[in-house]
Length: 356
Image (cartoon, rainbow, N blue to C red; front, top):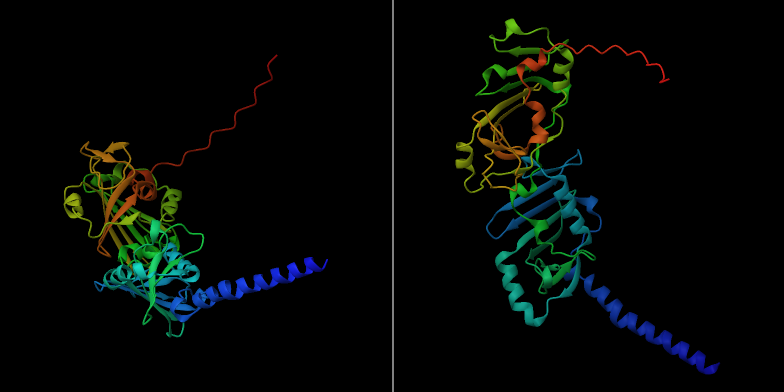
């Protein structure tokens, strides 16, 4: 009994020793100013500024609407904001950079790092650090607190990957892909013009009582009454319309669009006066600048085109977009579709007598 008690006391003493000399020391190390990369209360963050060694910068600012602005001009993509805020909350110093790797990592941070400045809601800077590269096996990234002397390998516990892409300074990586979001009661007028099929062009004005549909004069003598339900339904199509990606600056994109066939022009005006003006183009089926389906259709010249994606030039914002047909196809109605008669419901058939 006496020996057992002695062993228990020794075990407790050893356990406390391990805690104080290893775990506690590590905790103190990683809670020091030079290793404190995390910001637990991300709700207190009001502004994030990113700048790389080429001077390319991103400014993200929290808005009263709970969204984030981008460079004071655009709306930031929600998923990207979630990624960077999650990273700032969870990123943890894994280990100091070893002496044998110090020279390489310092040169990496000096030449290729992105500087990250984080401010609170009152505009006070609460964290400033540099991030670059990736750790062994692409796990974690190298970071150093501004004015510190010791760089660290920083990771998100349980995440198998490196963190540098979360701090990208590419504008298109941050911009929200929303093209327009217009409730029906905010629409003033919509015009769809088909340059190679002018008789199919139309416009709809959202008047107070009923929509006013305008078509080519040549069609009026052969059209029946306006189908109000279809015209009203069309005006509800303009909410939360997103592009697939931005193609601004992509090598060769200007010549590709120059040689493409325009499908239509989509012109939208809100009651507030804001306008959206999009030229939409077919993508040739053999134009493999993006991952496209092998399924093809044809344009008005019977040239094979991709059925899943199209190009769009947003003349209102000077953006080149890649858009999906399943998102935009509903806008490409033909003028006569708004004048087809209502389909009368079929009379209910009498039940047949049971088989005898």
